[in-house]
Length: 322
Ligand SMILES: *[C@@H]1O[C@H](CO)[C@@H](O)[C@H](O)[C@H]1NC(C)=O
Ligand SMILES: *[C@@H]1O[C@H](CO)[C@@H](O)[C@H](O)[C@H]1NC(C)=O
Ligand SMILES: *[C@@H]1O[C@H](CO)[C@@H](O)[C@H](O)[C@H]1NC(C)=O
Image (cartoon, rainbow, N blue to C red):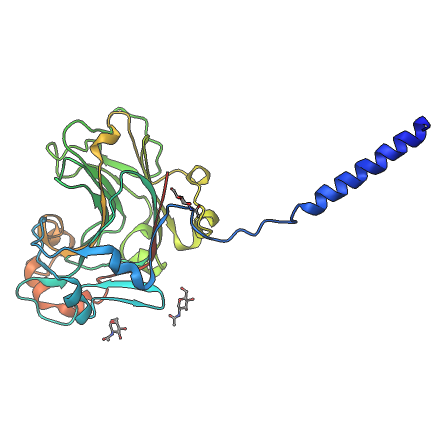
C-alpha cells in the first residue's frame, strides 16, 4: 500500500468510526422532573397520611383547640382540592374553649436534608400565630428550626433556631440577605432564639398571599442550616425540575453555620405545620400590633369571620438528601 493510499484509508476509517460513535449517542437526554432517589414527597391526596395530628394542649399557651384527623376532616378543616392541600382553622363558629385548629407532625424524622416547601397561602390576621417548623423530641435538647413564622399582622418572615446551651451565631461570619435580630440560640438565654428576619414583605402575611406565596428551601447539612425564600415568580428552575442545586442559588435569607454550634444540637426532627391563636407570642404582642380589639382571647373567641384567611395552602413538601 502506498503511503497516500494508507493515509486516505486511515482517514476514511476514522470518519467511519466517528460517524458510528456519533450515531450511537442519543441527540439529547430527556430529563424527567422526577425527584432523586431517597426523596420524601408530601403531596396530593396522601399528604395527610404522612402526618400525625397533635391534640394535646398547646405548649405555647395558645387560645386553640387542636383536633384529630377525623374531627378536622368532618369540619372541613383539612382537604385536598385540585392537588392543593388545605389546612384551615375554624372560621364559622364562636369558640368559647379556644378556636379549632390543626397541628400536623410528620411521621418521618430527619437528621439532615434539603427541604423544599411550596406554599400558596398562609394564615393571616390579628390573633394568628402560624408556623412551619421542625424539632426533635425532648425539647430543647434536640433543637428546633423555625422556617416560616410570625404573629398577628407581621409583615416579614422570621427564621429562628432554638437549642440548649452552647449554640450561638455570635462572632461568626454570616452569609445571608436577612437581618439578624438575635445571635444566641440558647433557650436558657432568651425566648427569641437566634433569629433572622427576611427583608422582603413578600415573605410573610397578606403580601405573601397576594403573590401566591412561593418556596421556602432549607439546607440542613453537617456544615450548617440555611433558609431561602423564593417568591412565586422567581423560583429557580432546578427546584421546579425536581433537581434543586443550592450552590447555584443567591444568598440565603438566613445562614446558621456550624462554627460556634455543632450538628449534635439538631437530631431526629419532625416537620410541623400549625396555626395557633394568641399565647406566648401572638397574645403578648396583640394589644400593640392590633390596637382597639380588646383582649386577644376574646377577639379570637367572638369573631369567627375574622379568620377566613387563617389557612394554609400547599402544593407540596419535598425532602431531598444532602
Ligand atoms: C434507591 O436507593 C436504594 C438504596 O439507597 C436502592 O436500593 C434502590 O435500588 C435505588 N433505586 C433507584 C431507582 O435508584
Ligand atoms: C370546604 O371549605 C372550602 C373553603 O372554604 C370550600 O371551598 C368547600 O366547598 C368546603 N367543602 C365542604 C364540603 O363544605
Ligand atoms: C388547578 O391547579 C392548576 C395548577 O396549579 C391551576 O393552573 C388551575 O387553575 C387549578 N384549577 C382550578 C379549578 O382551581
